[in-house]
Every structure is written in structure tokens, then in C-alpha cells.
Image 1 (tube, protein in one colour):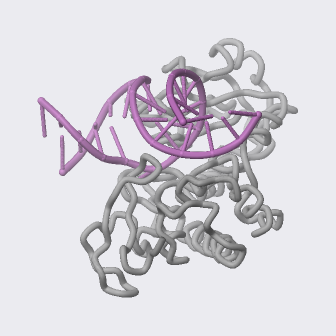
Image 2: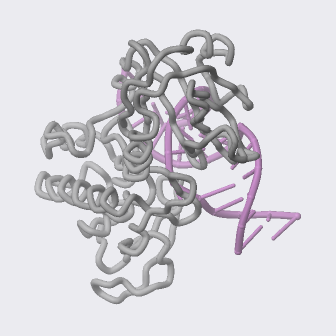
Length: 270
DNA sequence: ACGAATGTTGCGGG
DNA sequence: ACCCGCAACATTCG
């Protein structure tokens, strides 16, 4: 569900609602959600503190609280919903931050894969994650050096968060369609020119998706009932059996890098 | 009823 | 030590 554009959409929509709010307490309803603390210890640690900023790194959402950071990963079905204490809460509520003014930030998650951690710095994230797609440090040279020894499919590289942070299954397929590369093509067979195209396609697609507030296919939403519009601009993802808009051949669905993968067998070559 | 689902991690084998 | 594929996590939906 949420990849970089969806996470960015959540961050932008939450910012005006929760920035500078004072925390009163925290409730946890599914213990595994909060992986670094007990509900009580986190609640004590952050009560009376202010959420001073909300930002994104890869697919992670980062709330700065005092000199520390609450780091949230939505995984497949996690959602952050800002609401008033009088409103009905989801039956999938896993964690709740209560603010002094009686408003609340709810973390809901049907499949319970989402995780929330509290850290004193962001070193663990920066060690784990590769370069941001919009960073000027993302160059064809960087990718070439990272990929030259990798024989696995290029799609698995796009999904590998330690190389580029933020791309998921939908946008990986869209990027590869745009640059006409077969998802199974061995990563070390892409030359500098192709890698340059890969980077610009990544930036263009992710930026357009952010502008459209993400892609809603199964159940991404933000702000309670707001949905992303990038679904109408998808070229291959979820288009199994439809005609490629470039060559009119039939889009195929296969499995690549362990994930459902859509591509055009004519446009996208090995 | 079975299989798959937009994510990540940890495991085993190479 | 790196690389790669696969199972596991938990629930819903078709």
C-alpha cells in the first residue's frame, strides 16, 4: 500500500493537524506495534512534550518529539488518522496518541504488520536506508557501483530500500515500463545511460504520484476518507490482460523478486 | 476453500 | 562478507 508518494501524502496532510500539539498520553492496543517500548514507558517519556515536526525518510514517517523521534512504518495496511476523542474509533486501532486539547492521532492497522519505534536519534534509519530518490546524491555512478556485482533482477534492486529508499511494488513496475527494461533483467547489465534514465524516470513518476496524492488501488487513504488519484496514470501495474498504451501488446502478470509483477513483453526487453 | 495482497525481516544456501 | 530467494508476520477479499 503505502510507498514513498503515499507516505509523503500522509505527512503533508498530517502536518498542519499535529505540528505543535502537546502530548497527554499514549495507549497501545496491539503490543507488537510499539517495538521499542512498553506503552507506559513511552507514555511517561513523551507526556507534556510537543510534536515539533513531521517528516519522511524512505517509507518511514518521523515525528520529532523533544530531542527524540517517533518513527512509524505503515507496512501494508497501517494508517494514521487524526480525529477528536468524541469520534468513533476503528476496530483496528493499534496505538493512540492523546493530545492535551482532546484531539488524537490514531494508528490503525488491519494486518498488524505496521511498526512504531521511539529513538534518540535517526542513526538506525540512516544505516538501514539508501539514498532518497530526489537527492542529488542519487547518480548513475552511485547506482553503477552498487549494481555492478549484482546478478539478480533489476526489479529487486528497485525494491531494495538500502540502495534507493522509498520505491515499492507499484512504482517499481511503472519505472521499468517507462525505461523499457524487463523486470528480470540482471541488474549488472544496465549501463550508465540506462541508469541515468532509470533515475530520471524514478523522479518523474514519484513526483507525479506525489502531486496526485498517491495511488489508491486496494485501500490506501489518508485524512480518513481521502484517496490518491495516481491510479488513473498507471501504465502497467494492475493492467494484466490490457493493451500496452505504447505498443498495444498485452500486459502480462508474472512473479519477480517474489512479488506480483506487471510488464509489457514487447516494450520491455532483457 | 485456497491463494494472493502495494512491506520488511531473518533464515538458509550459494 | 555479500548475494539471492523464500517463509513468516496477520487479516481480508475474491
